[in-house]
Image (tube, rainbow, N blue to C red; front, top):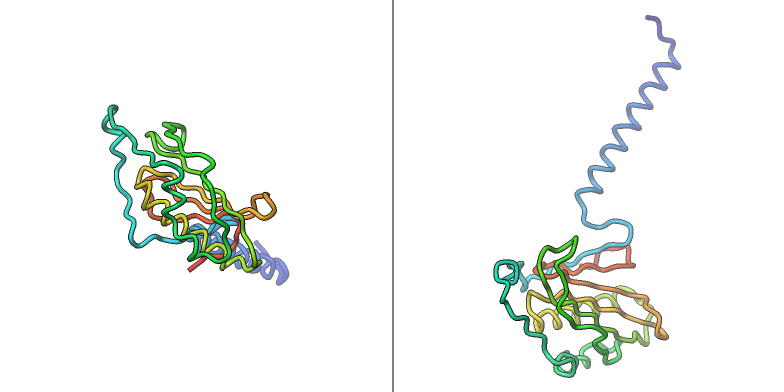
Length: 173
């Protein structure tokens, strides 16, 4: 079989391109970040098994909405208005989680900044505080709004120790 120099050059370029694509894909699959998903590990929260998965009579403790809002240190977050609880209810099991958990959705208005890193940092702190109040059974969703429209979203899945940041393409450290 006879190859001319252009066939060999095209073959080598194709192999190089294929190796590059494979390396790029391998590197990106090792990162948790993809298009619109970032994460922050929570050092002081560890994943635990859901007591509700083994005990059908397990009673969830959902604190009063006012208690939750009043026990978040809103003064520590100068770019967030005092928020409110939109939803705090026991849900599940579903296709994603095979146990019941507390679905928590908290809304807060973002003010005085367009700095996304600062906003996400403060929203993540609110999520940490809410998780400490609701405990590991809480699936925490914090929505940051501007003019009543959602612009920022952070969440902690039940029994997880990672805060996921939606709508922001960079990892927050």
